[in-house]
View 1 (cartoon, rainbow, N blue to C red):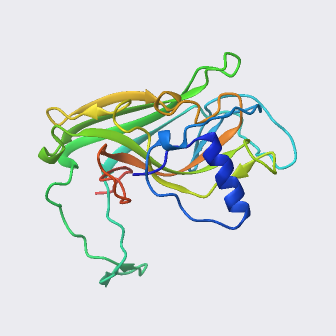
View 2 (cartoon, rainbow, N blue to C red):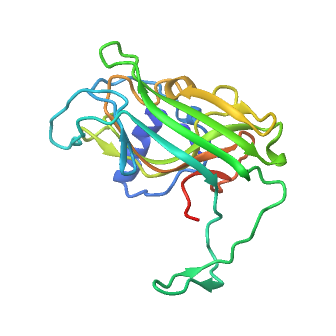
Length: 248
């Protein structure tokens, strides 16, 4: 599943996007993008779809650079069962707004998800400092009440995101094409073995994939989705346990 993000790969994608390649990367893990070369800049920041996590503080003002908010250090998501994408509508919603829709398939045998008594939480927050050059993003996950299909599986966090970086060939900052369903770990570091329907673990992004988010350079990330999946899942599907909420 999803790519892991390295500096050399980011540079390649910046150049590819300049050449009009806006294709999405297939899902792998963050280690697939592990950086090989360092380039200095001023800030490392993580922007999470409407909410913002500042991984590192500082300021940078130059043509073509991003304007960053003053502060935002933590965000948290509740976890829900992931919804399959609607690709072949066979029904529609009713008033007040009409949408083409797909009939809900119901529970799928063998799919690791939360039961109706289950719950979960994914938290991302700043750690370290720019001064000490140990800036990082902590990811903590707690899940309980998972179904029997989860038992004995190693689960890892998954992100879909859009990345801006200061490691660019032709510009102070550049934006790479969307990275979809990226595993933050392959399970060897930063995953959990489900036992008794429970799963609790933590990791930092630069531990899971060293210096993917460069400690002394600007990197802004807009989160398009997040969740949990099995470490051995190599599909491109949305995660079976996803960040979200619900209305009853």
